[in-house]
Length: 196
Image 1: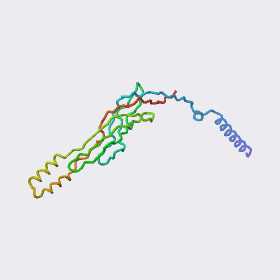
Image 2 (image 1 turned 180 degrees about the vertical axis):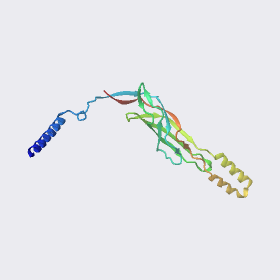
Image 3 (image 1 turned 90 degrees about the vertical axis):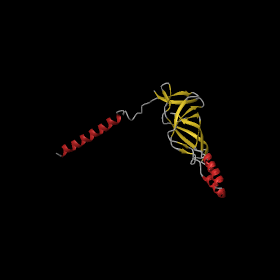
Image 4 (image 1 turned 180 degrees about the horizontal axis):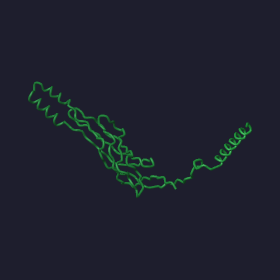
């Protein structure tokens, strides 16, 4: 009886060893990487190509400083033939040139910017050009009229008329989702990877 048990154990051990050896000797599909040749297709985005963008968030002339980046998003993909070179949702960057808050005596706030780059599908920067400007609501004429009327009618308290000068003009706002068209400023090469 003991010999029968020993024989079964030996056969089981031998079977396990054979299975392990067979499994290790068999080429695995996951063990050997599939060799894929990757080629790159170079496409040139021509100068003057129009790109539709929109502001990614609300920008205020009071909160923005000259030199700060302003973010925009691409609305529609830019395609050359059947290939997409700039995808929808890609980030476009502008730079604030002038940002001034609304001032005393009803002077309106101002915000102006220039466009710099947009990101292509290969993560390269494509130079773009456009300039934008928004101006807040000016209350200068209204403030000047109130000061003149108060000074003329109530001449004894004319210095109080100067208090109307503390009325500020409105800040300039660039609302979220405001749409613009920009153009590519120089021929730019984009490399698209293709698997062979």
